[in-house]
Length: 322
Image (cartoon, rainbow, N blue to C red; front, side):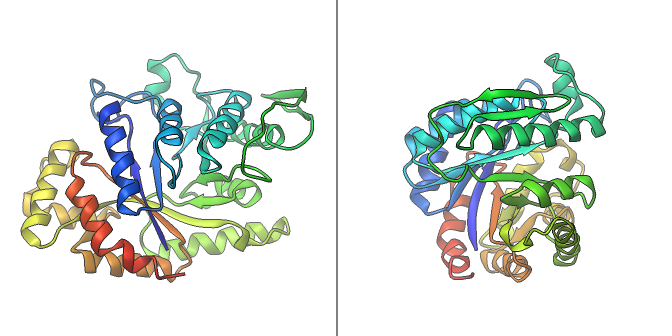
């Protein structure tokens, strides 16, 4: 199993801090680094919100080993032809380390705030499917043609092509068991299940994905399995309580809870919580269900000690697993 670090770029992340995190995550031996794609904070609209593709370009230029990518880019934000060209450029700059995560978009508030159309869910799903077709064709070897309802291509043949062949890995994230999972079955090279850490629930989603793959004669084993989830780690109960109290400052919904109860509250919400050996047990349960990569959402962005604890006591253990 591989461990990555995921940041919510819209929750006060600054350019200086992003640079420091990139460097430290690579130094500590994490496999990958991931960034959300939002225009404003989900918690406090006065917080800084980095532009995702500028940040990923910086990652391409200032790291040498990390795989990295978006979790995930709403198809509503950028025309898929533009997204494909940006992805190809960043992949080349990085020497072939980009993973392109895409989704249908869900945050009504930021779309309205920035004047971005936010169609009903069914329409957004159709835009996602067509957008993926556009991206796949533009990243291919020949002139691209596509006649969709939302997007059209008439012989576009962009150069240069990305470093990774036959294409940049396409990641799609969803907890749905319906249409979104069918899109995963058809198009995804990687499938992220955000926030589902229950082995039983995860297994049920995998079984449904396998059924969808059989319908289109695709081997479900061709799709890499990932889970993204937040974490709370501490060497002992007191350190765990202190980190829980810090989360109460960052996440207003936790403020009403007794600080002693916060670890249990977060555990019930699907976070990985506990001392390093307890985190390892929770990760092992996911590995046994076939999860190959876990992206750990790092909410307290200035807490480098938590990253160092993970790197020292957790990463070397899970790296020995298939």
